[in-house]
Length: 160
Ligand code: ZN
Image (cartoon, rainbow, N blue to C red):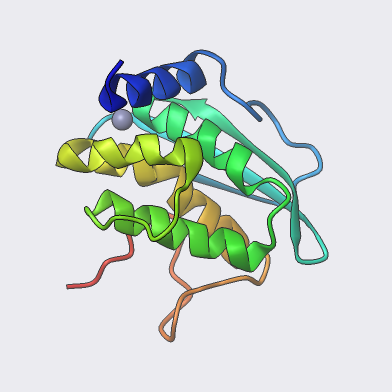
């Protein structure tokens, strides 16, 4: 089994059996993002206990990449410090733009293959950008300077 096959398996597994999928009654921030290019819609809910991501869930529908990415994200971020979670968002965003992560991200490495397909990058990043916005609502913004961007922006944060 090649590494690509393995990654494909991981993505399909998360797509078929999504983790942390459904409503999140304990979440204090929920952000919905959509990707009009593909029709993906994802709502990410987050609840913090102190600085820790104690609750995280996602809901929505869309292609296998967006759904699998959301499932993997919730699994990785659960129990992390909010700041760590934001760093992970940034690492994943960079990986989607072709930058190799400095450390092994486990199952998340499977998302790296998507970088080869620019149309899919938005799908894969959709839940991560929703998570970032949800954390910003909870006072953990990473946004430097500038206005409190509305959650409808849905961009990947790169400025050029
Ligand atoms: Zn998609």
